[in-house]
Image (cartoon, rainbow, N blue to C red; front, top):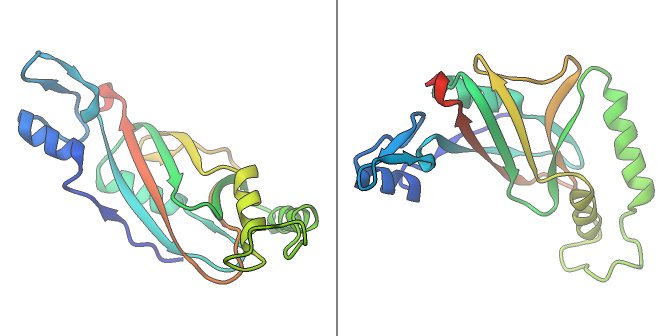
Length: 183
């Protein structure tokens, strides 16, 4: 899947850094008014955007590591946040595709589409089950990284998990905090 990272250069942290005359990315800045460390300037964020397929997973590790490479981020943590209520993030096995198929079959059995108990039907019979799936998984994940690579297990991948039928445009905030020793 192709993704399009987007950097917000004029967010509040950047504007505050410009006002204080400090770095807005990657280094611990000092607030010129108090001469004390300002934690707001140790990180940065970008967005990953994906066009998803119906009820499928998309491996997003390459997109995240691409951001780390572009910023020459060496060591720290990355927080991912899926900006949707009917998609989520998942760390799961990347070796055997049957794991994802079995997980999807389990979700289909436990959270069926079109169940008459669902009152929320405004966006179609797949929407409320998608909300429940997202509530049972995660919309935010924090991961460590070192030497510009995510520290995942040998058989782990980071996935964007689409819970709706059909293709959708999805956005993920990637917020990176670098270790101060690494900058």
